[in-house]
Amino acid sequence: MLRALPGAIGKAGAEASYAVALPDGRAFALKIDDGGHRARPVVMSAALRRSGVHGLVIDELGRHELLGGGRPVGEVRATI
Image 1: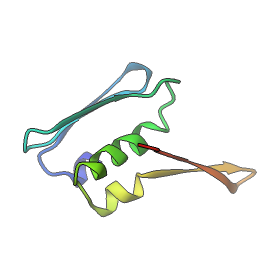
Image 2: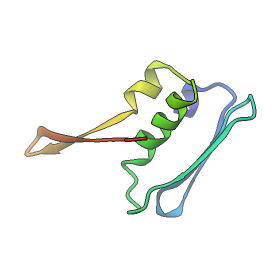
Image 3: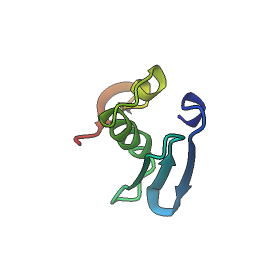
């Protein structure tokens, strides 16, 4: 995600916390309650999109497919 946002910096923390700062001064911080890491990029992508940051990578990270037996059975998505 950070490679797709020139000048942005980010820091992942314990228990699925994550912070991203953009070069224009906006910053975002999140914490996933269950501590699971798979929701972290999904929720951050949703927060960035909601604030007007768009791009292919942001859109791609906006959902996480869940597999069962090698087949898609669901997805993780943000409901911001």
